[in-house]
Image (cartoon, rainbow over all chains, first blue to last red; front, side, top):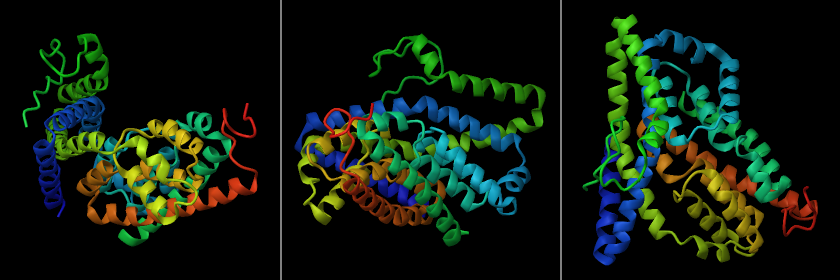
Amino acid sequence: MSSILTWSTYVIVFGALGVLALGDRAKARQAVKVAIKSFLGILPIMLAFIGLIGLLLGVVPTEVISRYLGQGAGWWATLTAFVLGAVLYIASLVSIPLAASLLRAGASVTTIAAFLTGLMMVNTVTLPLEIKYLGKKMALSRNLLSLVFAFAIAIVIGMVLQ
Amino acid sequence: MNTNLPQQMSGGAPQGAPVKKTPKQMLADYRWVLIIALADLLVWVFWPAQAAPVIRNTWDYLVEMVVILIPVAMLMGLFEVWVPKQLIGKYLGRESGWKGVLLALLFGTAPTGPLYVAFPIAAMLLKKGASPLNVIILLDAWAAIKIPQLLIEARFLGPSFMLVRLALTVPSAILMGWLIQKGIERTGGLDLDPAGSENIS
């Protein structure tokens, strides 16, 4: 299923590029340039995270991961993962493979979901910048509400998929 | 596609590469990769039994990541040339209704960089008269349901995880936007720094 999705992504994306190239070659070339730049831009941190995942999975036994992050670890594990996610700043493109590696090693869906929703929706590190641009009212209320919604979403994901 | 990527590890500046960087900058960019490689080396020397699983896991994830990252990066490129950032502002006003909500969602999921890039855009939209509802939806979508991110999520955590999270996040973003808009209306408008009615500093 995942790989069908991946290959259809290839067909759609590069098909769209082909269509764009037929209509406007300069724009298509520009798109390829931006694509290469994005790829190279994310590569250093991506490779570092992949290395970290490899090291983690190779060295830490899965029993340890499932003991501290699995079903049996309970609410504290979920809450800790959520708070970690909320205060850290990790690009989601690299945090998702990390979360997936922990999930595959035995962490619970709720805990992994809490880590990811916290990371994505509660933006503590960029909050000062958000206040500067959008004002205290909007920035603080957005992040406070996100805190509530992110946790609720993680719980529901856990209930649906566990 | 001939991407002509420069070599990842150190070893001199790539020739004719699209991004011009000195070897020193490259080294700084890849410092974490080097640190991890060093840690791998230590495992290999002091704990040889674990070296094989470390290498296998690293390789598996590398392949999995590169396979999905190629179309994701291409998608980012296509969005960059296709999505007109300036035009969006005038369709996100207070009277835009469901059309505005939909547009804010669409614009937010179009991949255009990290969230902090969205703040100046959001501020610009607010000053041009976009509703807080639509701006919050835009920011929430940008933060949590960008399309490249969803593709990576489907690949690594499975399509059902991605779809369930997406289905929960969209109504949450709309509800949050509505709540914040009500709150702002009740407390006397926005407190934007330069153009607002009250000052924050």
